[in-house]
Length: 469
Image 1 (tube, helix red, strand yellow):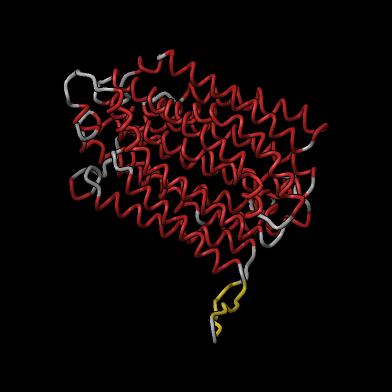
Image 2 (tube, helix red, strand yellow):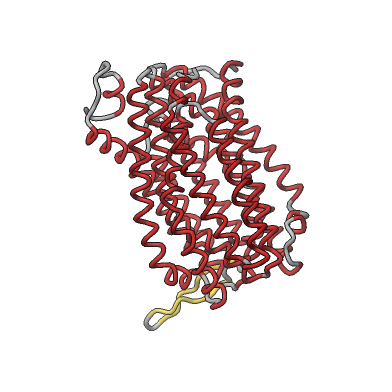
């Protein structure tokens, strides 16, 4: 058997555990590579901004939790439609999948514009609401304003990439996301730093730079998002074997599709809003600790992404595999794919956690020249390493459950874990041990979250839901 399509239509016979691992890895590896390259580029991005000093890192870190919230809303809208696409393709209903794709584009444009307008309106006041020092507010506000203007492109990139993945094409969005990271670094280099000269033997080569500092980092990311969104749309709308417009389909609005999208997206959006609100509360808790703590926290979050991004790659593969299996009425395969993906995720993230613990000082030496930030950031990052195996379980299980259309249950688990454990524990610990308290609370909470998700996965109530389309 050469792929998921062949397996889904191979009657009711099962496949070997070895073959299942191969298929999970084949779909996961492109996404993992894209995520890992994204992390590498984030490190370079953070190093570029961090080279300007702790002030720049803290300015970006102040509004980063809000950008996570907004990015989460974009992902939720994409999931509302892409889950339907995965199940329709699994059921062999390709033309209906293309109809869903077209309706999703209309919804994405409208939502992206609305989100952008609201974000632009609040950009001036956001750093004040987050309790940032006065010296950080101007740069933080400018960074967020530029980010807000690029949100329609962010939404369309997320949607097109998610649609390609759920159609079974993991390679194209992965390559384009790698390109996004590379473009981000190139544009950042152009916009962050002033013009200068690169010395080579016997001559100097002039290099253009806009010298925009923190705002340059936002503009570089915005330009990278726009270019990548256009490329992602081209491959989804023109080149995709399953989704291309020339293969047929209708732009007619189907209320059933929109209602299903809302039913899937709203719980996920509520979850991400409340969880991201918890991140914002964490920022409010950290902000009074000073610029060094805010910068160390922001860079530690960036550094940690090296560890958990492989989990998101495997989670994306799990969404596709489980979604198409459910659509094909192969619950046996859905169960096996979910468990196999979770096992692989835990093993890989356990390995990356060990690497992160050992390499933490070296990582921070690349991210910032500030010795205080390096010392504090290294210490809190090492605390988090102990939570990564269970964090992997929560990420991959959530991806598998999403593919089955089970979004409400995982949302509740995330909310209970985040607010009931992390935030409560942080309020108790931070007054006594500072930034360490936030990261200890995070470590404990992620372990609890992983256990909750594993229990839900193995109880298998999600298998009883059946196809949503």
